[in-house]
Image 1 (cartoon, one colour):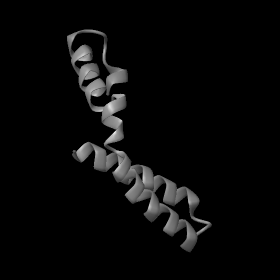
Image 2 (cartoon, one colour):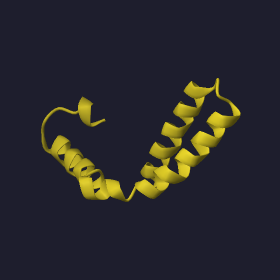
Image 3 (cartoon, helix red, strand yellow):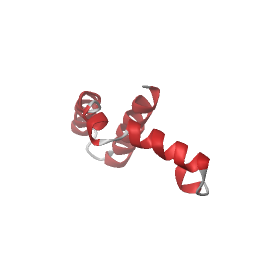
Image 4 (cartoon, one colour):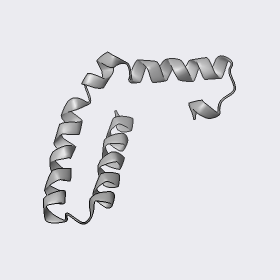
Length: 70
């Protein structure tokens, strides 16, 4: 949503929240989550090598959703 907001108080508030959630130190906390899910992705790839697109989309969706739930 940040990219659709006009510059102003609301934009600055949203940007501040994004910076807090995704700064270089905060991103380190996502490593365990990514590692857990990449294992599932790779096992799925071994079972279904022709299904790369769907597995990639699922991996991205699960990681993003998990981060948002925090």
